[in-house]
Amino acid sequence: MFLPAGLGQTIFQERYAFAGESWGAACLRVAEHVAKAEGADDVVRWTGRFYGALVDNLFMPGGRIWYGAGRPKAQLLNCFVLPTSDSREGWGKTVSDVIVVSGTGGGIGINCSPVRPRGSEIKGTGGRATGSVSLMQLINKVGDVIVGGGSRRTALMLCLDINHPDIEEFLNAKLELDQLTLANISVVMNLPSERFQQLVREGGKLDLFFGGRATGGQIDAESLWARLVHNAWKNGEPGVLNGFEANRKSNIYFFAPVNCVNPCGELWLEEYGCCDLGALVLPRFVRAGQLDWDLLDTTIRTGVRFLDDVLTVNNYPLAEIKQESENTRRIGLGVMGLHSMLLELGYRYSSSDGKEFISELFDFIKQVAYDASIHLAVEKGPFPVFDQRFVDSGFVKTLKRGMRSKIREYGIRNCALLTVAPTGTTSMVAGVSSGIEPLFAPAYWRNYRQIDSEAREHKARELVVTPEFKRFGTLAEGAYDLTPRDHFEVQAIVQQHIDNAVSKTINLPRDFPEADLSEVWLDFLPAIKGSTLYREGSRDNEPLEYIPVGDAQRVLEENAFVLEFDAEEQHQMDCPGGICEVPRLELLAEEAQADRAMAGVG
Image (cartoon, rainbow, N blue to C red; front, side):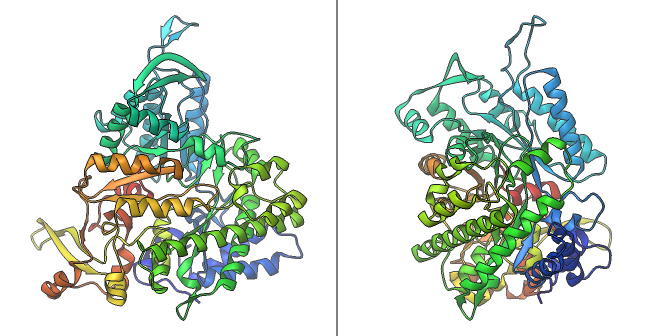
């Protein structure tokens, strides 16, 4: 049986466990709650199966499941996408939905492109529209009020199509005007990215659209891209979301378009869509230096069933969300600890062999997960809006021919099954690297504030060496040891096998040139459904100071006397991006900054 240790145990007790609850008791609580979805004759059997996967830490449910299971009216889902429309009533409904959903702990994504641009005539009143950004400001204020009322910080993703007439105002709002401070912001690429690449590289003009019609306005594509790149280089936002590719690959293209992502970017969702998350703990499947493919197969099947059952037992915040979830039965089976697994198997994260293994691993997860969902369809029925057009989606065509034939014959239980989420604090509980992110650094300085005996505050720092560096030496590359192209390549490889989306931070060295970023980012636009950047030093109060892997041994030898943290605590403080989410520890940045960095801004 796995047991959380050190900081992982602290996080588990403070965030996910009931008062005084042990790891084993919490696993049983969650297993029993979710297994209620099974028929009366199967509840005991599946309680046992779920409990086994949880207690051995083979499978890690999302934080909302840990927190909510066993509570009255348990809301177990992480995030939602809400619609808006171009009317007072539409705005009112959006604000009302935000209040209700965020009150249950759910993150929210909203694409505000249906709102008419600033200055447009309002024929009914003779006035002029205030534009899409004004609605975003209103939503941001709602989040501010909810935080002010003592609840957890509302997680928001606010998006706008790249050819919306308000796009320049949107890009200026956060960085130049210090607005939308509680939201992640992203630009939606709603045209073929190859076409946008051509416009940028050939100096073309991008036509502006609203409501599906050209407005007659244009914007220089190269200048727009340069502004977007500059903002992201300077402060990590906006992200870019490839809406065209997401819809081209969407398994429900025949039912409803996907128009926005959740705040962390791992799921493209239709209006009132929701995300239901859990992760395979990848290092647990390495036995004596070899991957146990059979155990991984069994756990994938258990995880798919577990997450499908979550949809059945969940208490939904809105009737529209419940209806949409029942129609599509979308789940998000992901992973954590990819880098930890690679090290156990002897792979360098950036190596060609490592990348080949990553592709093999995620193809295996894909094929097994889809097979599991087909078996569930035979047993419980396919998702209600399934029809034969499903097998013609851009993603399903990547499955083996025999798998597609089985879907035609039996249907499939879930419209989509796979994702890669950040897994911030849950990966700390498990003691593994987050999602598919590399380690932050093999060794690093931790900056914090110290209070002396006279109550005066001083800046201090301590050297941390990770257990990965002690075990694997220079094989344990850090996030900034990789090139941005390495980061993009890993994300693109994984995205080939993921039907939802991939949350991944592209870490940039402090001095990485904007022109180089522009080129590599543009190159990878067609291959990924969303992208998030973080440049070292681009935000204030970064508590972790990266040490290059090539310098780590020398720095450790020169500063051996300051090593004060035990290996378990050091390991669990590790995080991508250099900003961590750790409860009530003043030696890290404020929790709001931590959540944003762990999620990946945009």
